[in-house]
Length: 342
Ligand code: ASP
Image (cartoon, rainbow, N blue to C red; front, top):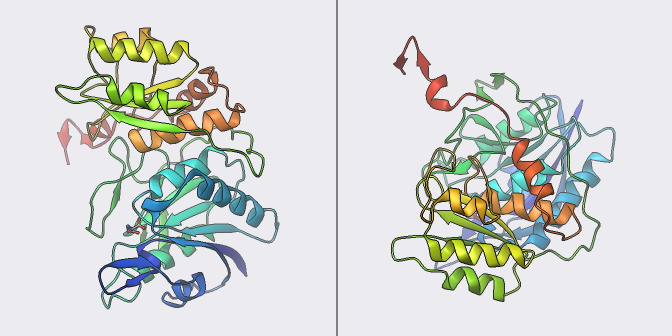
């Protein structure tokens, strides 16, 4: 027998109609009962909370992180499945991944259709997640959705309502779940796990501010004024802004705020290409460029670095997280065979 712990947190996979819209309502056992359980797998359900994931706080995510570690404290457990709303699933999955040093997997899944939809995706996604959690090691935290397995890092929600909700804009799926079997592509090396924050840790404030045409530094400065210990600046293009924002970044970094630069573009890395307010100047002002991490996960990287460093924003912790990105060829190269894209 393989043993899997299912940690239920809410989301559409646990949602029902409330008269004017859907909201998370079902307990973990009800979610589980909607799905078949793979042969040879025994499941224990932990009801952690029941919320739609746009309502999640860092405190929820810290509770989830500790619940995962509590489940894996039992040597009989082969893996963990987390049922989660899709809106911020990529954030929680990456958060858990950064602190995950266990060989056993944590598999995040959810649904785009509510629990009781006749043609819904809840049952299939949960079955595939149970199969994955009970059959593989050394994959860290992954997202199983619509028959695909993605590494948590680098994966984003890419469609608001389509069943194929997730994708890795700069990579490939790790595997596929088809006909009741998981087939795997290549394995990614696992980075060293960050030290687990103590229970009851007070979470630092980390904000996201997006640049746009006619953008100024008002919202960035407001984040500093609100007590942010970290800020992700979502630049245009390869991570660019303007000289006013660069000055604001310089002031924030001097005040001890961790500043990271991501991009509002759907795919590709931020890169120090442009001066005159671009990523070259933002980096010179003390911001760290987050590679291919998209804004939600860039924020999680800053948050995790602050939590692991006891709230100190030295930049070293964040640099370590960013440097641990798997060195893979860009997806555009991987899809080329003999120079022909397919
Ligand atoms: N709003 C929902 C949530 O994130 C969406 C979903 O679960 O698919 O909780």
